[in-house]
Image (tube, rainbow, N blue to C red; front, top):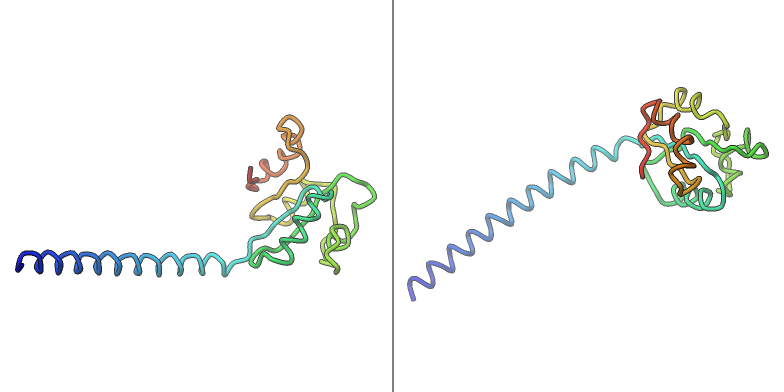
Length: 140
C-alpha cells in the first residue's frame, strides 16, 4: 500500500514536470512565431491565370502577414495593369503587373516568389531562373 502510494506520487510529479516543460516550450514557440509574424512576408506573384488569380484573392483576403510587392505575367493585355484588377480582388493594390522578372526581383527584393504557371519542370525551369539568380526562394 505504501509502495503504491509512493509510486503514484512519483508518477504524478513526473507528469507535472513534463507538462510544465511542455508549457514552457509552447510559450517559447508561440513567442518565436509571434516575432516572425510581426514582419510581413514580401511576395512576388508569377502567373495570373484562373488558378493564380484565385490563389491571389485568397492570400489578400485570408492571409495576414503577407504583402504583394510585385506581379509577373507574359500576357501583353494584362502587363501594366493593377494586380487587384487583374485577379478580381475588388480593389486596386497599387502593384503593376510586369513582364520583366529579373528587373522586378532586383527592385522589390521579395522574400518569396509564388509561381502558378505550369506544373511541368521543363517548362517552368526557364521561368524560375530569374528568381533563383536573384536569390529569391521559390517553393515547390
